[in-house]
Image 1 (cartoon, one colour):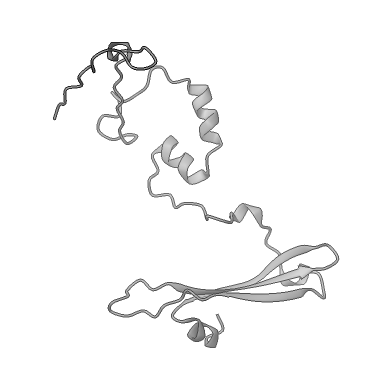
Image 2 (tube, one colour):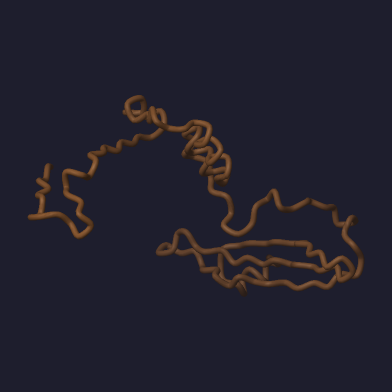
Amino acid sequence: MFRVLRQPSGAARDGSRLGDVPVRVRGASNPGGPGHAWADNPYLERGEYAARLAELPLAERERLLHGDWEIPDDGELFRRSWFDLLEREQLPPRMRAVRFWDLAGSEPSSANRDPDYTVGLRLELDPSSRSFYITDIGAGAGSAARARSRGV
C-alpha cells in the first residue's frame, strides 16, 4: 500500500516546501521478538533513556526494560509500598472508625460470568496523631446486601 504525496502549488504560509521536510522512517518491535535487532536505535542516548525508564511505574518499566509483558499493573490509586503492616496490638487505643461500601457488586449468572465485587473497607483515625489506619478490607461477588450478610 503506497500513496503519493503531492506538493501543493507554491509554498506553505511559512515559506516551507515539501522538499524541506526530512524523510523519516520509524520502526518498532516487541523486545526480543521478530525484528528486535533491526529496530534498535543507534542514536538513542542510553543513559538518558535509562534515567527516564527509572521514573516509570514498576510494571511499565519492567515491560520496556525486560520485555515482561505478564507483569500486572500497579493499583490506580494506591501502592502497597505506601503502607506499613501492623499487628492489631500495635494500633493506638480509642480510634474513631468508619466503614465504607463500594456497592458495585453484581450477582454471578450464566449471562454475567465475571461479576463485579462489592468491597467494604474499615478506616480508623487516631485523633491524637491524625493518622489513618485501614483495619479491614473485605470483598465478595454478589450484591452489596448479600456481601454484608456474609460479613464482607
